[in-house]
Structure formats: structure tokens, C-alpha cells
Image 1 (cartoon, rainbow, N blue to C red):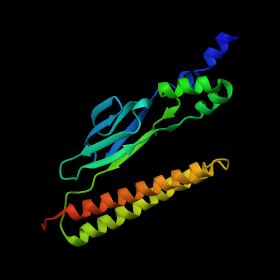
Image 2: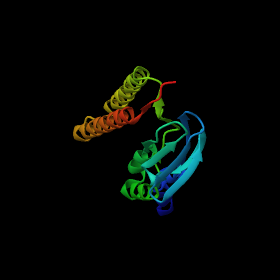
Image 3: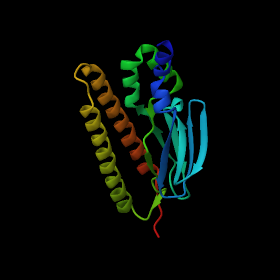
Length: 190
């Protein structure tokens, strides 16, 4: 019985593992990206699939490409359902073991990075581009917040509210970064 409990106590570690693979793509393609998180650093050319250790979360992804501004984004993991199952069947000890190993956390299967052009032919072209980017950014964060609200547990509304507030802060930071890119882009008539 003790052997059975000890085997179950690392259920998420066994079923989910501690690594997940994410396909990283950029627009434009063939960007150089540096990924770094806790005890993890990797440089890749896009597009590519990268095995990511769960314990490295969050991972900062910095991408560069000729003629484009540097883009920096956060790649975060989310909890896998096996952790919750382990808490039920394996108890707190199993949950602690899984969390310590980074098991039960998964990165998304795909991650896209958009790099903004460093220059435009006219102010109108630049403004039109950034107007569309702002729209896409807001749509992305609206979807994210909708998912967070959809997954909210009625028994922990405070936690849900803090997740929504965190998403709104990140939206604001992304929009500010987008505006900084707009201001720093050059107009090169041609």
C-alpha cells in the first residue's frame, strides 16, 4: 500500500513529464530568438520546435530580424489537469513533489512573435500598420481575459479577479510597447 501511494504521489510527473515542446514562429520568418528563463537559455532561428523545461517558466523570448525592431515577449506555462488529480489521489505530498519537479505545467503548443518594421515609406503607412497591430493586440487580450473568466472557480473569485487584473496590466504594457515602437520607427520615403 505504501509503495502504491508513493508511486501515485508523483502522478503528474509520470503522466505529464516536466518538459513540453512549443513551436515558435515569427513574422517575419527566419528571426533569431533568444529564450531565457530559470536555469534555461537557448538561441534558435524560427520557425522551430523547442523542448522547454517547465521549471524555467516564465521564459523571456527576445527576437531580432534584419529591418525589424527587437520584440520581447513572455512565454508562460499553465497548469496541467494531472496536478489537480494528483492532489485528490496522491494528496498534498504528491502535489508538492510535482510542483518541485515542474511537472504538471505545460507551455502552449504554439507561440507567435510579431516583429514590427523598423521603417516605413510614409507616416500614413506607419499609422495604418500600427492601427491594425493595436486592433490585433486588443483582440488577443480580449480572448485571453475571456478564457480566464471562463475558467474561474466560483469558490475563489479573488484569485480570478487578480488574474484578470494581471492580464489587463500586461495588455497595457504591450500597448505601451507598441506605441514606443511606432514612435521610434523611421520614415524613409522611397
